Image (cartoon, rainbow over all chains, first blue to last red; front, side):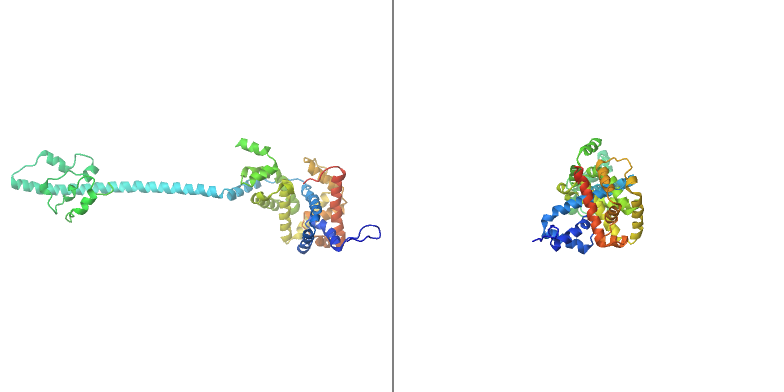
Length: 222
Length: 195
């Protein structure tokens, strides 16, 4: 393949001369794009030359160690580590942020629940007041009836109707049963005839009270 | 935490690189602590400006972080790999800079300062670094300048020929001979070329 030169040195092929001509610049990264592609084409065609190029590249890389040394600023380290933290811990951080948001939302949800309970409590108290009003009206009627029949109420009857025998929610949900006498359809106390544990259904089955007592429905949340 | 940092100190570069490949930020910090000085020195030598050098180092180390898994120990040391990333990115930046002349002036100034007798008079802390500088010190100045313009400033051999008003063949010869002499320095002194 190679001829002998006059001096005894083997004549190299043109591509090989070109290769040797460019290899120093290639190792230093000093070829332009087209020359670099040309040179790498030789390497593809002659992979046995790769070791020679790698060795020359190792020598060129030594230049990276030669410059006078300087210390980078501490801020560079902090900035860099912050940046890789943003990159690498993106998911955990997002999770943490999400946890924070969840806790934040949880706090809001708790506050909303407390407000709802307080609101219901107040509404309950209001309803109880209306029930008491209705009871008062009923007692007035009964008094008139008793007065008309000549019978007097017993203390037990008075106590149970005034609703002081237990806590108000118990009284509200499970009021003392009225005597059959006053449970005629259309009575404003009809809803209080429902047995414990079946207040909702009983309410549906029971005729609604007159318009004066629209808020006497049992509170299903209690 | 302190124990873990001590463990990083005991690990080889290759091990730290493996850990960095698994997104171990502590291992990456260890690599930075070991190689940031050399990286910054190279970047500063190339860019001629502290801020530009720091930006370059930062981008290069971010690239290291992202591509740590692609490192192959059989192809060279971690230090060489990191410095090659700094160098390649620096070359890219230099070649896209419009004010090449300004950088060239800095290179010229630095080169004049870095003449052998002064440049290598400092106390050496790193033996490999010392060997490399010693190898460069024996180069004829014209060869050293061509190597520096190519390696640190990103000029192509054609640009260097224009810049120094030399035949292209002369530039190529100086490049090749310069590298060959550095190689011979290590061969004759029985040392291996640091990889």
